[in-house]
Image (cartoon, rainbow, N blue to C red; front, side, top):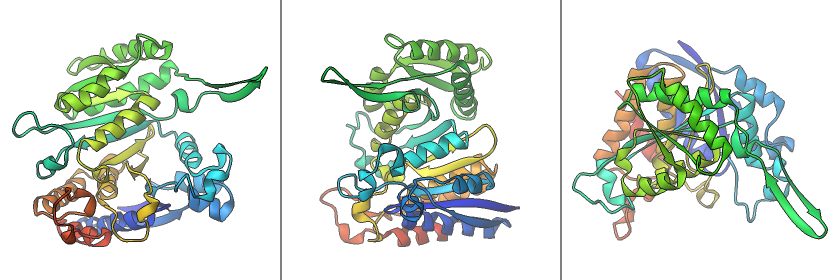
Length: 364
């Protein structure tokens, strides 16, 4: 099978970490008899530098013609980068919001699991011996507060800012369906997170999720308010299997979930549309302070590439090979600097490229 993969290297550490993910993909394709063409695409700060826009129509069309897109990280230092002197709709992150909308990427999948070897890096109190968790957050990505009408205006000397959250039945139903389908391949439990005691959008959310659940009688559904979910993630994350929630709540909760794994450098993500197309990226940011130093952790991007193999190409065996290689690498004690605890010897920390090499060698 010959694949056409768009590659958005992005900003900051983006080019370094995407290079390692491509290295891994090349190894997989060589071993399993596939080929791939990589199409370089510009988005974010790199696109602003080249075209004066965070996303061009040409990039959107090129992405649409790919089978999937692998992306690094977007953005820079908001305090110092000239990109952040531009209006909000011209800044790097605006390009990311636009490409999600343009490609219909409505479902963001962000898994979070605790590797036993990294349990000491988890900031949570262990509670009981051998504690672990394995959950996935399914976040609605193209509706809600981030895409509603917004404005700031001054009236009689008083400045007022308004952001509007809007959800339709169809938007809720399709993300709920995706969550139930994923739960059917995992442990069979969906936790729907909302703020139905306050918000009309959440009351509609809860109603539509319950209706969708009727089509999946083998899946257990529970409802949870977002503030309680935030507490439960740090109290007992092992209770969760699949969490489904709206755009803003999902943004916040998935960042929280990523940190209880010990390092956000370990967390991949996938953004899917209603076909097999997806955009795959690490959950972390562009880390401009360490860009170009070859010390970034590429594992989140490599695992994002594994998600691409699984969700866009239906290559489950190949995805397992990548994930097993990462697991073996961690088990053997190899670490980038972010995975080394305070007080431990940091001289053994691997660089970005070296970690990519070791994982690649372990793909068999």
